Image (tube, rainbow, N blue to C red; front, side, top):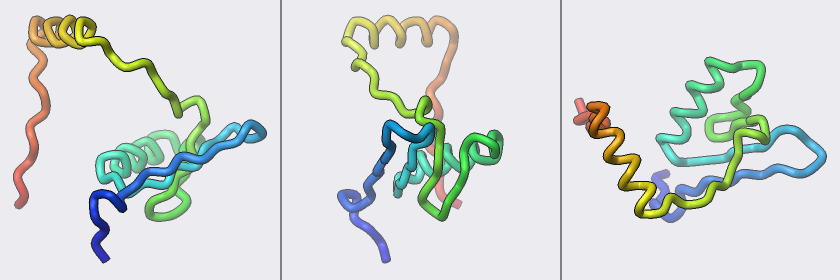
Length: 92
């Protein structure tokens, strides 16, 4: 069954009593990142099932958005350092 983009949600659940958060997601990029992290740090990030992971609560954060000025400065620094953004891979 294929889910619409609207239905492909990410849910993060945690409480004050536990040190871990549960991340349920259908986001392919986030799933891949969580899979890689679970392989690299199996003692900290645990794959529960196909779309659910347990992660340390300290890994979950909400940050202040970048201002346009800060975004522009970061872009200029990256360009000066020769950073090239990743390109999308074409399907085989």
